[in-house]
Image 1 (cartoon, rainbow, N blue to C red):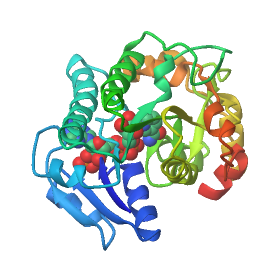
Image 2 (cartoon, rainbow, N blue to C red):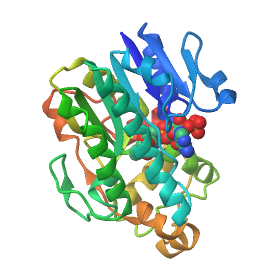
Image 3 (tube, rainbow, N blue to C red):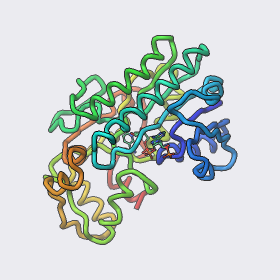
Image 4 (cartoon, protein in one colour):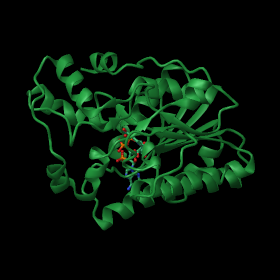
Length: 300
Ligand SMILES: NC(=O)c1ccc[n+]([C@@H]2O[C@H](COP(=O)([O-])OP(=O)(O)OC[C@H]3O[C@@H](n4cnc5c(N)ncnc54)[C@H](OP(=O)(O)O)[C@@H]3O)[C@@H](O)[C@H]2O)c1
């Protein structure tokens, strides 16, 4: 099987490269900065190119069986107007470039495009959110809706499109957990905001397993919540992480401090999202790490 990956040098992308290579697939990685090519495991075909601009990479992409797009400027920073534009543009343009490449060449494989549970908005309180739940209307929700609409443009031509609505992906080498671990290891961790808000997470190994599962299941298309079936409240996350690391977690970070530090982006940490993987479960997907404590023990 031939795989083409955009956003290959990011946190999730690198894990996917290793897992596809392990399965013996022919893997192409689009890398925008040559100095990052060395991060790719041996045996990967590296193409240097810009995912936001047309290029030779589009021909290679259209010749593969599976195309996965994970490109997106990080949301972990203060959302200035410039940053917000970059967050939106990197996602829309990269998706647009893939869609136009595949549409023009009569692609018949599968296209998996990243999205996020931010689709539902940053704060939905106690509501249990599944794939059919209505979208939110804040900045990230609007980004996710526009991003998904772009990808679904390809579905109109009969291509199978899966939208990967990632929850907070937990792994050692990137994402939210790698930012939290240093404070918790020093015994300086604690819940964010009120601690009552829901936190929807997934172990990186389940991201890999679920991605392979969706590729193999030819009936799978449309949005999929990539989250564990057991979301937790923020205070439970802090308590469990402290227990796993055998450290105290007495230091809450109040919402107003987060707002001072991050501005509008703080809502992403203080909001409550209780998201469930309804479609994956109904297709018979079995989680490797359904439970937070198990996941954190694997990652500590
Ligand atoms: N990790 C999570 O918890 C999580 C949760 C929800 C949604 N997602 C979404 O899933 C996708 C992958 O996540 P991740 O954690 O792997 O993200 P990541 O580590 O930040 O990687 C993002 C990728 O996008 C590329 N990129 C960033 N800015 C770019 C630009 N201006 N032009 C072209 N490419 C650019 C990066 O290239 P370089 O390597 O060259 O910088 C990298 O390959 C993202 O779209 C993210 O929004 C992730």
